Length: 160
Image (tube, rainbow, N blue to C red):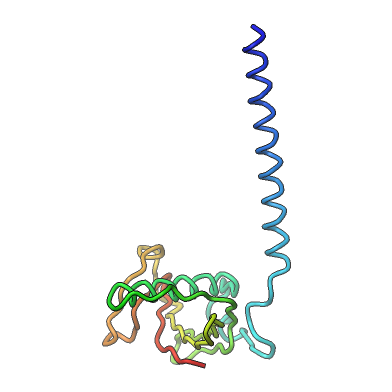
């Protein structure tokens, strides 16, 4: 009996330690989210985007932009010589507008070896429900470049 109780106590202590670690992790995550820098650079007005897309989440968009960036890097790596995966140090929205009914957002990615400006476009009226989690290759002839995610497609990239 003694061994059973001792083992039960060890398991309960392990569960308590795990719960404390989970709480610390969640507290750290909440602090990081609260302290993150603004998604848009000073002076960038997102009002036009939010007018056609009231649910636009600037921080969420930066996550999508990063995903597309890294997916594009993997596509390039698979097609050419092996290069180290680029590392994004920072990302910020530097321009936002609506053109011909399409949302247009430019993001500056600060990388280890410089910076790149990527422009993304999306039709806010398009229903992307079926492909929200898919990262689809969009042919350039169809107005896209490389990958699309949640309706957003990278249309241009430039070294800054």
